[in-house]
Amino acid sequence: MEEKDKKTTLMSEPKSLPRRILVVDDDDEARLALRRMLEEAGFDVLEAPNGRVALGICRSHPLDVVITDICMPEQEGLETIQALRREFPRVKLIAISGQPAAAVYLRMAKLLGAQATLEKPIRLETLLDTVGSVLAAEPGE
Image (cartoon, rainbow, N blue to C red; front, side, top):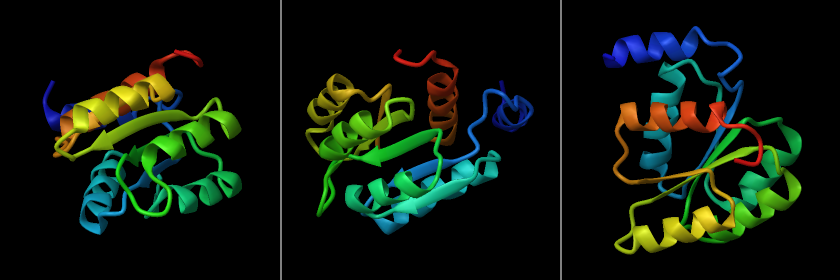
């Protein structure tokens, strides 16, 4: 399926689309790039520079998906995933990392409750496929 067709298909499936995605990353450029990709695909996107801010946003806005980087200041991604699992067990979690030890961190994220993981840099098609997959999964999967 071509990228344009994939965007159209995702946007035409109202039950499988989230109304809101939170992107959590301390890297402003990476966060903005993810935001733009998701907004162009029809998603409503919020941003947070770290896990502490992300938790505050989660408490005041209903979210369908949280995409969080692992290595961040103040409150890193693994700690954030644990807190989100406790407070918001139904929210879908995608962990991302661009660190040299990304595979290890991402494996830990899965063990802590992330439904999916991605290594940076992230391609648009991969991002949209992953978001679609986690949204289609039953709660608890």
